[in-house]
Image (cartoon, rainbow, N blue to C red; front, side, top):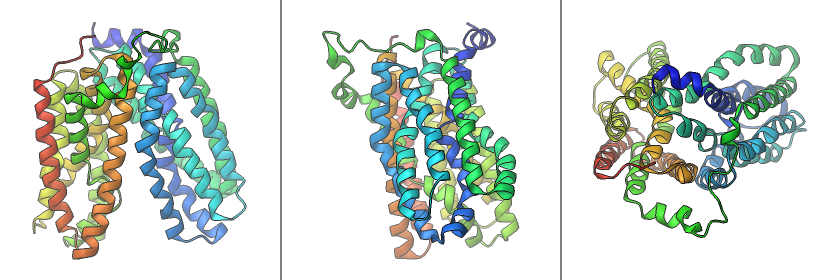
Length: 401
């Protein structure tokens, strides 16, 4: 089936996945910065208080596998419906905060556990993995890009609303917007995809158990590669400009390079989606996720030429963007649809573990050496090893269905 024909036939699955993920927890990552200054002023919280909420990211190790298992058992629509109901309720709860920091922490905790688990790729990517074949990579790239696009579009309007009517009005607007978008996504889910993926009353329930998944060499290689290639995630999203300033670049140049990094993320997402549809997934995955080995290694060296730093930043951005397409694609290549979400949940749980572990390693190495050089070197070597593990997938059989 041709690219265009797949999009014409399966447009509802793609639209449901794109709208559903853009109205889910992913949106929080792009609008939180609008509220943080307002909350600090309103309640006299400290920056350390707000930073404490970041520890909840570790919960993805648990919530993503659970969400995947439930999606395989009950289908996309019932699981996604939980997030569609809870997302606006969480925003309404935030709008009603009275001052104690525990209110914000608890609501953020519930957001990542419930909304984060039921409105992400583990749930919605199943629609694309099931319905798309020839254009699966591009379809996954479009769905993965929906949340940042939604964030970019709504940020100016939301910012103006907050300035005019306050942060409470902003949260109420988000509650209404996510409720409407979430309901549209549920209505768009193709009826045939609303059914459970697995008959849980089947005589061989262990065929979808975790044991066979954990023992699978393909799962071990994928998860091991993902964990090793993503240790630098926190550094890339929070410390990149500081590293560039340490290299002697001016603040304006550093900001320009950070903008280039963000642009490279989008480019990487699209380019990787196209590449996945044309080349073996293990090859694209190994190359794309192995790019940080070069970028991080370059930053670890005592080099400050703008051309060199630009090259390194572009490689890091391209790799981070590619990851949005790769995980769901490669899981579908090596595992049957009946356990797709279960496996993807475990892989993304491994990614959450990698991010948390990388953050702790970053804190320890910077505290010990007062520079980023050691961490850059270690994470570069880790990415190189992860790349080699992913290359070994060429020896593993693809899913037969």
